[in-house]
Length: 218
Image: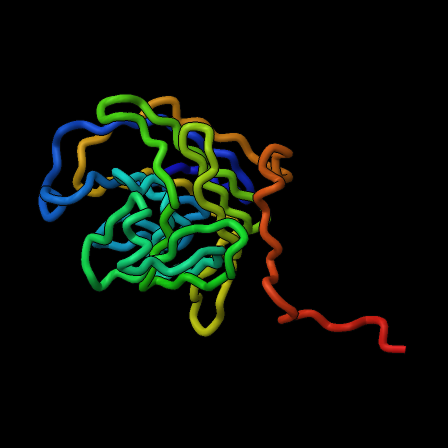
């Protein structure tokens, strides 16, 4: 967990898998992750703070999963038995109802009961190094694997008492989830705006007319 907090960041790290898998994760895909905009006390069972996750998982790197009840918006379509054939990540249980990111598809709110997964996989063959990145600014969450954007989401938020509050600033955590993994070259730069090479992927914070008030009323 970093000491410093960031309200805009470009984070990148290289990872590669080892052979070991442990505990209740011994028979499933290797899994770890990057948690960012991490706030509040860590869950005593896991050590994870309430945050946005860029998951690092075999066939699922750059997924989003809710951490401690976080919610986010993304464009996509729900995974079904039919279209799952074309999605790299396969559900770990039949009860999972997840969104596959599709740029330009209808926008939905994805809650703690669901995940978001990329529509393609560009992970290097087992044992090779991969570079995974987070670009986070102004509520925009862009996940990049080996130079290719493969998930975009917006408006991360969490419940704070009776109110919903944005996940707009926080720490970075590297997650451990029962799989042997090596990290190297962890680097971060603060952002004061969206880098030009990622601006085409930005989503409007408002998907419809909600929250808008007309000003020109005659």
